[in-house]
Structures are given as C-alpha cells and as structure tokens.
Length: 146
Image (tube, rainbow, N blue to C red):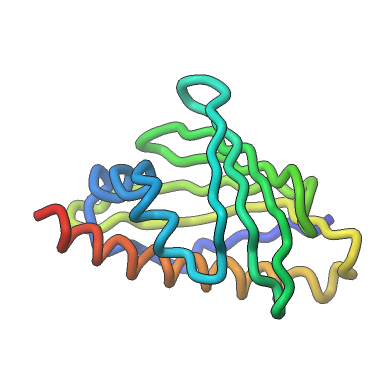
C-alpha cells in the first residue's frame, strides 16, 4: 500500500456550486472521462452509491467499480471495490476560492499486480488525466448551462 497526496494547487475554473452540479450530472461528468464506457450507478442511500464502468487499460477493457460517498461541498470518498486497484481508498477535498475551486486528493493505493515503486507514478498519472478531463468537462458544462 502506498500513501499518496496531491496538494499542488490544482483548481477548477468554476465556483464550487458549479463543480458540484457537474459532478452530480451523470451525462456531463461521465462523458468527460475518455477511455471509459458502459457506466452504471446503483444508489446505496442519499449520499452513497456504487458506480461501475469499463476502463480502457492499454487496449484491454477492464471492469471497475467504486463506492462513492459525497459530502457536499467539502468533498468525497472513493473506495475501489473492483478492478486492478481494488482496496484502494481516496479522499478528494474541494475548497472554494470565489470564482475557482481548489482540488486536493489523498489516497492509500494498492494493486496486487504492481509493486509500490511503480504504483505511485501510475496513480499520479491517472489522477492528472482525470483532473484534466474534469477541467475540460467543467468548461463544457459551464458553456452548456449559462
């Protein structure tokens, strides 16, 4: 298991209320993440759900599922239930800064298929990719909902 934090000043170019509307919009949010397909969501209660999808991992489609618990406007917790990172846990914190929203993420990541020294750079690359996709998705969401 590897503990990883990313607090490098990442921010979305939208206020926190817009970020949460985007995150809770299945079409806009799901469409932003390239390399994924067949999204499904199963509610657990008012604040938790299981989301599953297939992820393209180097040309192979792999089933992934996460239990997500949201704590608007503070953040969310994601527990990876199925897939190559099963057992990993992440906390994403959103901090309002007026017209922008800062994002930081902390995780305890594990993968039986990957040794710890290779795991951290892979996770950081995945987080950066997801952040870039969400940044673009939020810009599109703002344009569509003016």
